Image 1: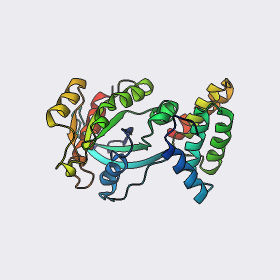
Image 2 (image 1 turned 30 degrees about the vertical axis):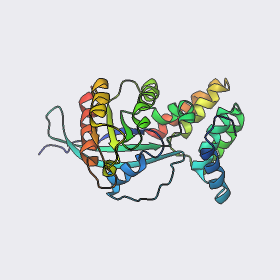
Image 3 (image 1 turned 30 degrees about the horizontal axis):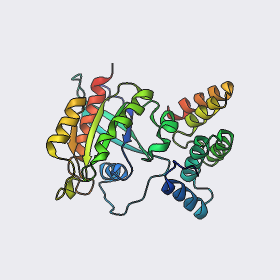
Image 4 (image 1 turned 120 degrees about the horizontal axis):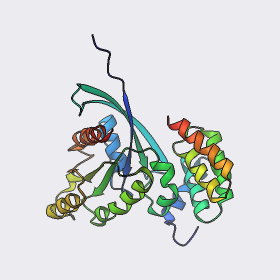
Length: 181
Length: 89
């Protein structure tokens, strides 16, 4: 009988403007819950999630323990806190809110800040609040072009309904594993 | 408060500290606001308080290393950085 695969640990950071839904996405992903009340994140919150993904090197399933870093979306403190937040990160969820156009454009600034500390790590775009699609401020073509141009995989998500959340999480983890030496 | 700080962040910090003077999240952000205003030593004092309340507060040791570097305190920076590496291991 072969020994069980050892648990792989990784740190993933949430990035994006205030109230795009970073905390709600984590809550949905880890607890499978949603709360309509908005409570701004102050400081740092870390949440652990364990999952099993296929080994990209084809050796069977790999147990992964992810530490999700949820940080406040206050741009004015971003540069000062970037080392504290992003040191050792292996992946980024870049979160935009489809009801607020500027939240996608600013993802470049977030990404630059993170990469200046953590290097060229995998980034996955999440266009959140899909459940509010009656009045999207981001046209589908515009979203697609934005992420394709940067070669970031992406998905629409809804922390409220759960749409796209678990799958996006799995995809980023798999990409990080693939990226490892 | 500086002219370029979002008032809601400062307001939120003050509100949370009024409710609970040991709110580590609010204290962590207060340390950052003070450092960004150029009051690095004051920020360090607040950050040390955070680390006394919660020695494992995420990112606090690394932020302490950054503030010591801003103050030109190389030994203290190195020591904080080592603790940050240990804390995240």
